[in-house]
Image (cartoon, rainbow, N blue to C red):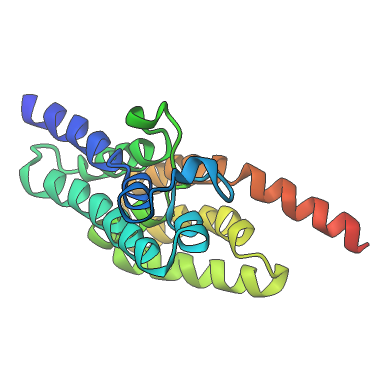
Length: 193
């Protein structure tokens, strides 16, 4: 039982590794919280720090989600521990203890954890995100909406009721960080009308 608790705590702290902040500071001397969108994630680093720091941020964010899920799957004593571990990794990324609970939007960390949990589910979810992005011409808003397809794919592919419950929880966590995207999108639509 103690090992499960340790793995869940570790999952949060793995998610909380502030890769966007670290690469911005180390490679360009920039604080990503104070430039661009202020988001501590891949897209803000890519747009405002550079391609290489953005790529490095993405790789580390995917890896920390994957590692949190992998460790829970291999060392956990509860068969479904992988799901709350993934949720806590994304929570650590989005609400980072080391950055006064400011963080990213969780997509890269979600991708990493889902590659371990149910790789087909994440592929299908991003297909939905891609279709929505083409239709509305806004990738950030599409990601915030498309993440809600994940519970359906988890339920269909994994079967057990615990997977879609996890899917709903993680979709809400990721979508909550996309609220600004939804607002910006609706404002742009009003201007176009």
